[in-house]
Structure formats: structure tokens, C-alpha cells
Amino acid sequence: MDTNDKHKIMVVGAHAGDAEIMAGAVIAKYTQARHEAVLVHMTPGEKGHKTIPPEEYAKQKREEGQRAAEVLGAKAIFLPYKDAELPLNDEVKYRLCDIIREEKPDIMITHWKGSIHKDHEYTYRIVQDAIFYAALPAIKRDLPAHGCYTQYFAENWEDPEGFEVDTYIDITDSYEVWLKAANEYELFSGSISNFRHLDYYKALAVIRGCLSGSKYAVGMMRPKGAKIFKGKVLPGKEL
Image (tube, rainbow, N blue to C red; front, side, top):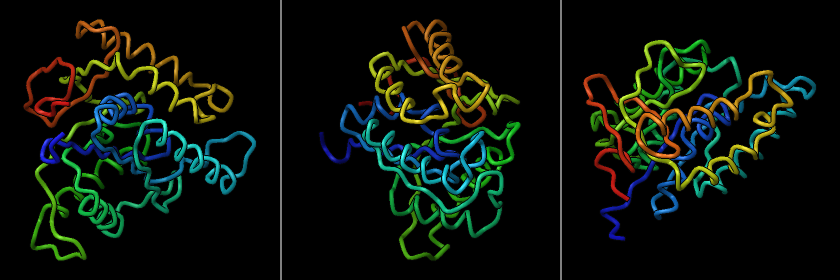
């Protein structure tokens, strides 16, 4: 593969596990074809365990996130913010801006803004400004500006308001890898949360597959104004 044809996906999730559950199959699809991927976790998502204290669970979530990234063939980056306390300020936005400039993705995937979870909404807003800051040469940081990439919003059960799927990607060939990565997290085992995460996202993969003519698919949304797309890969991002 010519280096000019190589893609790099960056998925920014509010909590460790968000990026993998909502976009892990797309990541695996591209890394299996020798493209690159980076998972950025804004917080560990450490405050949701029934019995383990947050500090201990944060360590567990980071370990789970590293293992999941290895399964997906991706790199994991953990930011130092706390679950349910993600700040919305320029310090966070510039930190993510610097990561974008260092990693140089050409595909960006994150949460949609219409969320019931504050951290998810804030992650959306942080990503939008970080993209802008990273691409603007007049903003002087340690690394030069980086822009020119395509953005997608991933389907997440907590981000439903105003979310409209316009991009369907066949994940049949990466479905099992995605499940293996998700199962690195205790959260998705059903022993922590009453919400049946894996059942929901597995069923969603079937539904999106039915609507797009494949066995399994994921649905994503591009910035407003895009046309409906159904295909094997992201629009214009061939394997």
C-alpha cells in the first residue's frame, strides 16, 4: 500500500468503551486492511461500577481499553479527566488539538451532540473546537496545523436526539473482531449495568445490515447536508 493511500481513523469517546462499542467494527475493518486507528478516551468512565471504587475501576478501565485497542489493531490514548466531570474549556480543547496535530487523522469519529449524558455532549463540543484549532495555522502550538479530514458521528444509545443515519458501512468482515474487543470490558458483560449493551449493539448491527443489504452494518451520520450512503467502506476512504 502506498503511504499516500493510507488512512488514519481517530475515534474520540467520552468514556473508555464508548469508542469501541460504537465504532470498533469500523476501526477493525480498516486496521485489517493495514490502515491506522487511534482511540482517544476523554475519561475512563470510572464512576459506574456497583462495587469497585472509582480510582480502582479507572485503572481497570485503562487496562481493558489497552487490551481492546490491541484486539482492534489500534492505539489507545487516555486523557486525565474524570467521569461525569469532563470540563468544557480551552485547556481540554487545546489538549485534543495537540493530539490531532500529532496523530494526523484523515477520518474523525465521535459522539453526536443530542445526548442524555453530559460527558457525551461535551465531547462533541470539545471535538468540534479541537478540529478547528488543529487546522488553523494561526494558532501556534508545538506542532504544525493539521486539517483536511472527514468527520462522522457514531450511533450511540445515549445520543439519540436528532441523530439521523445517512451512512451505512458493511461490517460483516470485522464483526467478530469488534465483539472480541468489546468483551475485553467488564462493562459489556452485563454484570455492572442493567442496560444490555452488547445485545443492543448486536441487534443494531443486524438492523443496519437489513437496511443496507448486508449481514451486519453500522450507521453513522455526517455533518448536515450529506446524502444517504450505503457501502463497504466510508465514502471516499477506500481500503
